[in-house]
Image (tube, rainbow, N blue to C red):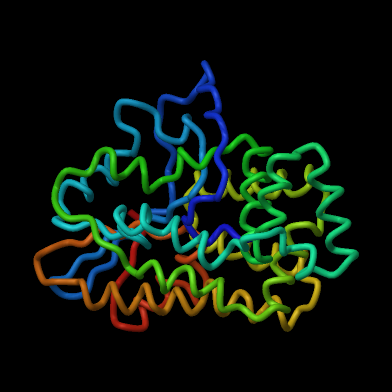
Amino acid sequence: MCLTSPLTPAFSYPSAPVPESAERVAPHLPFYIARKGPMTLYLLGTLHVGNASDYPRPERFRPAIRAALKASPALAFELSPDDLILSQDDVQRYGMCAYPCLRRLAPAALWRRLAQRLRDHPAEFAEIKKARPWLAAMLLDTLTALAAGLQTEYGTEAQLENIYTAGRILGLETVDEQILAFARLTSAEQLEMLRQSLMQTPERSAADIRELHLLWRAGDADALAMWQTRTTEKLAHARRIAEAVDEKTLFQRNRRFAARLLLMAEPEAPLFAAIGALHLGGSRGVLALLRQHGFDIQPG
């Protein structure tokens, strides 16, 4: 499953209704404080989909997170809001064909599996037919998130942007850097992404997303990294190729995020960074990389 990018899908859906029983207490979420001498980084693991109960009003986030936002003169996302808007043109340019090309790019057996999966979603199938395999995988994962009861409009970044008033909002990578991490995958790697998205029944895939959502709400970055590892091992069609996909779309970007955070960190000027939750934990995650550079990291 590819849940490591906030790139907006090429098609949209109606909003999910807000449940009457929505919780009134903000969930914990993976939130950490990294300190090195006079430098402080606040790190929040985000989820690019969610539901209304993840951000109960009026507070939306628990007090420690709100206090860190207020204290930070800069907020860093994977992509800045302006770049995220502009990214749609590049998603179309790098991820879509002018004609239904996916049938030509995918093996016949994989194409038949895709057609069977989307038999009840003709509009989405018509759009995915024109997608290259990497984007088709992302679009399928969006459908899975919807089936799990989650919506892109409740992604963490949008909720943070709605309440952040302390200063500037920055990006940790450019549009080209993020999109090309996927668009430059080899044909075999892109097809591995698509196979993973189709490996399980829709019900089993939705159950995996719900498990991820619960782990994110609980707030343990290492547990989320373990979920990612287990999921890759379970869904991998070709282990070596699957590991190459994770290296290029997850671990290389982790190193980029950590390097950019080190460049942005300033003495006596805390930086709040909101990064996809699957990028934070584990031995190759952003938290581990910052520890290697001498940061002391504690749960927030």
